[in-house]
Picture 1 (cartoon, helix red, strand yellow):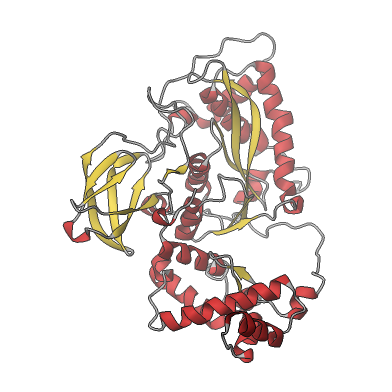
Picture 2 (tube, rainbow, N blue to C red):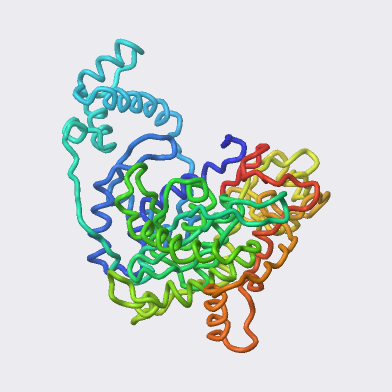
Length: 478
């Protein structure tokens, strides 16, 4: 659960502003195209972190875009206002006016002003109220008009323009942490233009950490997408993913609940995975998660991405690489994007507490709420920020946990026994090993910095169902 103590208000505002301008800061846009995009964004209605619907002028969007290009995400953090008290007092009643208009769209600005004056004794300007409702997209014409609907097929115009992500629930797989087996969940990403299975990995848990592992590996292999289109599930609706996308310049889009029309390609791939991969693996027998992931990687490269797609009439890998060079981000930027962030108040002894660990910080920060940025794989290295400005490192004082609770730790599963008959998946894996060449290594032996133990069992004494960030007032905000 979110709480005020564990949320960085300034970063929340910065992430919201980036969600507004993310389409306009793409380096691929020409000045003319950027102008069209900005006009379209200015015509839209946005829901702020406070739940208020607002429109933003072109000048505001241009100013935010310039600040992001100049200073990155830090340039979108708000600055204190000199007229805060007066603006806040009037803003309260303007929001009351907006609520009254939403409750009854036929109410006029004159009626709203009169109702507030009678109920609260506050005299508002009818012109001010009318202008506020217009900026918020709450005109009577907009609220009572029948929305237009568009139908038809859509396809991205180039590789890495749109990636679609989803979680597919698979079979039960033997796991050393439980007596028996655990349900496998496949986190998978597909490129909309080429239909390439960008990356996928079977996980034991459907949580934020698992989604980040797959996205980071996909970006390291295939480059940075311009748009990431996902559903509203917990692995994709969280502060950590929003921050990672903002740092990398990715426009994060969530599909509308109960409107699956935009996810047809993803659902078709899920059906293909069930028929072609899961059925074969169940017939062969699954020895464990590491084996399942090794075979899936081989199947993805040798079968899914090497077949001729029924709709495009092209091989997905060929279409993805046709005239396209993936843009791989620098390792330092990738590491920064996938760091987590939490807010803590510095005690009178110049210490902070994080997941049963205690750290020493600069005594000048006593009594202040500071932001802690860290790799969840290594809680011994914490960087401290005060209002977005680096304030040194947090020195470990008492360390009881070395990794985030959502990061499991390691016991290899037992090997699977041989199966009689034709081993189709074994043949696919052998072809994949041969294609990689002599001396190749298995997928499970490939580790990205900071993601070495993301799918391994927890240490003895730790809770098997490790909580997501947010339990015990440890909500991640970055």
